[in-house]
Length: 463
Image 1 (tube, rainbow, N blue to C red):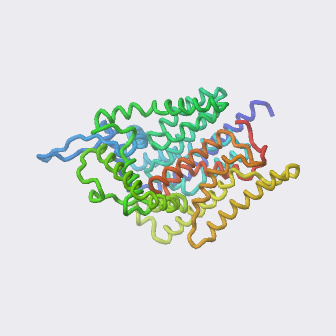
Image 2 (cartoon, rainbow, N blue to C red; image 1 turned 180 degrees about the vertical axis):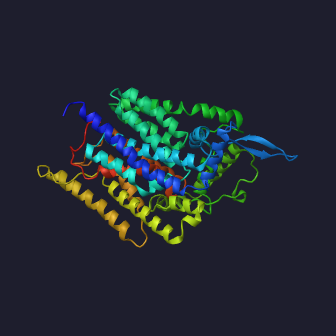
């Protein structure tokens, strides 16, 4: 076969993967999409306002009965902004949003495959893309007006931009700009910016590169920050829910998952969104400092709510269209999505473990065999325990690839950037609170790490 046959073949696989991912998402979205509920209601509302030329805003009743335009930024603007473009082009309907979400999900499968190609063999990279394409939870998510697939797409695309460029500084700059755009959908994407330094050689260079990446990542965010400073009651980098989330994870009624805050909990006399967020941030910080041991004791529960199961998509669709999801169907669907998530998480925990079969390096093989046994024990306890706890597998998936143990498989920048996304997600929800929808952002990372499981140390391609 000629030298140019391989690129053509890979382009063909990418196109096929896109179709394989798109078809079930379109079917699910068009069959089950309903009235947006929960946070989806606000994303849809914001998108309709932007599409109508009213900006990211709502209307507030004023004395005399008239309504006044009021700027808004409680939720990040990025997803609503994307939907607004779709609504302007196709009309503000459920079908238009469903098509947009299906396209995002299909693109996510292709980007996962493209990123995996920078770290794994072609066979393993294709497996990672196919897992994302056919993952039942991600397929169902196409029917939801929620941010997680778009946030994952933009973040992984930023990683791909960073690792594909033969000139490290140019790749770092492109990746940082991509993360800045992703931050408008999910502000936590900014936490990944310093890890882009992994694409540059040398420790001293990487220290400088981390600082540069953080600065460049802020550039796409700054215009929105300036807007907030100009029209809100104070400055907000992207949105005004960080303080709210910290308070939810720290106040006396905290359980580790979402709980509704009331004014009686601590912030009675506030008016503007920024003032409210700062009040809750101060309140949450005081709660943490007043009893740090209690706050730390909630971390396992927070991570458990984030990683132990997967039911949000089914519950969202049930809330939107209860007649379409009778209880038996609802239970079966939750069982399937949860089982697939748990199996994928268990496989991902092996992403930093090599196949322990190298006879010429017995010490390395013994170390990797012991590591395999340890991860398998964690997984066995999770599956057979009375109270399933799968979040330790997520922690293992984030930690093991970073440990320089003898005989470990190669960990090129593409893998380590994915590990950084997983680690920052774990950190974020250990600090704030957990819900299973938050792990959807890292499901493609789990697919890539699962595809990397039990490699031989040399079973990689140059990044």
